[in-house]
Length: 185
Image (cartoon, rainbow, N blue to C red; front, side, top):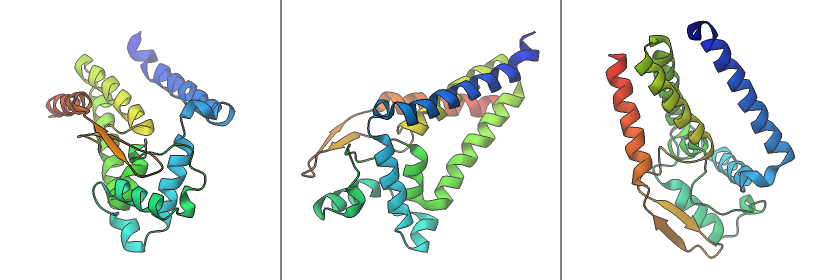
């Protein structure tokens, strides 16, 4: 019975989650903790890049440096900012700014091929790792489990930065990747 309803339950869950996400985005934006403004800023940074920057990005950790420059120069891009952060709180926007379209395609390709392979593999182990990977993907859409492996940095309007370690998230990510690789071989 579970195999018959698995894809249907997955689709219903995805639609419900998407609906809840859109409802909170438009009706309760305060719940998003300034992410809308951070994401707009990141997309504007990418749009302002040259075609080479759009293609290959500004480089690792460039989000922090671009943000610091915009704070120091009181750049117009920051005019709508309510929250200040040294990362995008969205792994895909972060990838777009730091690694360009090429890097974003690689991240999305990894997610797509790995999760599809796990889903189609069908064993209980693969399904368990698929669920963990889907959770990781959801976290990637609103946070930073991939690129901000060594610190969680915060910045105030004066440009002061503080850092806090985040090793647990990366340990979990590495475990998911390793188990997925074993299952898919």
